[in-house]
Image (cartoon, rainbow, N blue to C red; front, side, top):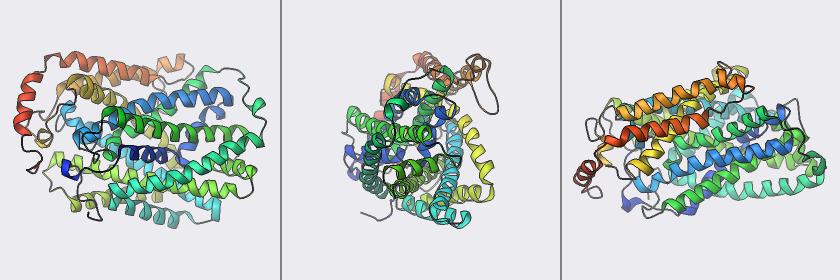
Length: 469
């Protein structure tokens, strides 16, 4: 097997499929159990909600977002394609650019934030300077992404063991350093911060949906939907909820003016001296690998965008060029923009998150209820093929679903009238998901699925023996 992954956005033939379905658990456990997840769990505590109600909001939000994310993961073994390419049947060869460009900006933005968080952490640990730390951190992360899929899976598995150990020690130790009976007293229920926390956790987990099947597409096709859903859901849910709850606890019991990373270190050192460094270092390693995942996913998305505009020769060279481009963009953003402005960029990324809610509903409804997993792999790479350049059904459903969410938005830039009436609580996800799904189901009543299936059988007859392109 080649050291560097040779495939990019192209189909993975059955002969090249490998791995075990349980490998999805450590990928998504470690994908969530890192420093960037901590702050999400501390949102409601900072707004005055008790630890008890904050914890319930975190758990509920993680369930909601992770269920949707895990259903997307089941598409990887079935189709053998990256997540974003799978949007072409719903939106069209060119229409899918809408979500791809948003995904690309999101990847780059999150990595710029991760790189800044990494520099802040190493400054806390050892006083390292910002610029050189960002550069070295980014080079390590992109090197893992260059080697590709198999190294990412292995790195996540090894880190999962370490992260499980430190989180277990932290959790057991937490019972001995505070009076949990007092700290866990329910206190006053405040609906606004509760809803803010719940949907922040849900949106955080849902954000993995844009690339989750990138890391399941090499699995054998006979991996069932139930198995891939199970291992993905429990990996992401346990990693995300556990790490967010650590952030909730640290913020409630060891609030620090220096932020959540300092609170994590202080609470860990209270368990036993020096444990703070162990906790930060282990969580920091997880930050490296999630940045690698983001670089990897961003490169595939950039290739998808470029492939829609001009025919590309897919392979190692194309993937490496796209990786270099997204690496340069994220690194430049984290170096050029000041820390305060960059963290303000999180609000913009939250707005972009709204754009994925209609997409996830349409993509899942199409896969599970409309076409029921029956697609032509070859047609997804044909500009004027079975799925067309523009799919009006998906685009209209997306526009209607997004418009329905606007009155429920709550951002630093705009607060909708319904969100204002709810005390600035953002429940837009509960609107966007069903509206987009219902409109898409209604508009798809006229699709000739029997005719599509006949074309699929012809187009994909020699899928395993002849190149897709």
